[in-house]
Image (tube, rainbow over all chains, first blue to last red; front, side, top):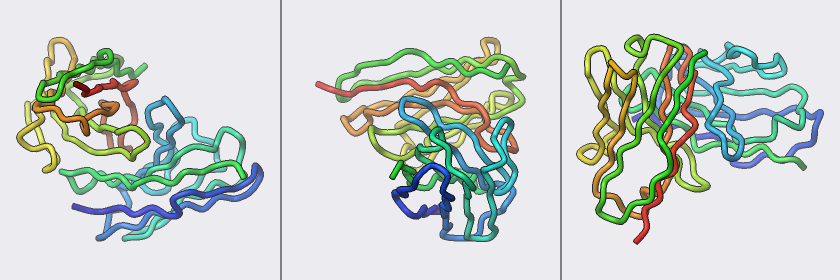
Length: 109
Length: 117
């Protein structure tokens, strides 16, 4: 099973700042099958990014993804109020099982 | 539009079973595997398993092997997840999701299952 470790656990930033979220895998993950999700309280996760760097439909261009192998990054260039949420990375190339990271909570400073 | 609609909240006693449904619409249900994920209160997402409705093939996370059964009714475009021998730690929101090459690109609204004596 591929273990995904996200850091930091919590990130405290202000609107307008840049956020950098990390996802590290215990073994190499195909970039084609690395996704990021955003989850707000009481809602299901929403797909943000797939293939490590491709934005899902309707996702604004302040979100970007990068990385390969075992190290992946989600960057939000200029935080807006609606971006404060929990973010999860996921690998879905090695199945079963598909695995998720433990999440990064992005909170308003 | 693509939509997954799940059944309503459940309250179960320890040792009981629960079956959650997930009705798909807006796409070819047989063309995409349906997966199940759960989330305990305040916790991360935990993967449970999947079904390919067209073939009936299933796969389960080892943690739930022997306790979870995922089935489907293609005529109703509906997937089901049954979890048996419930314990308090199974209290969680259970989600179904559609897997495409993009990942889980559509999710159900979630079903809260509460296990309490």
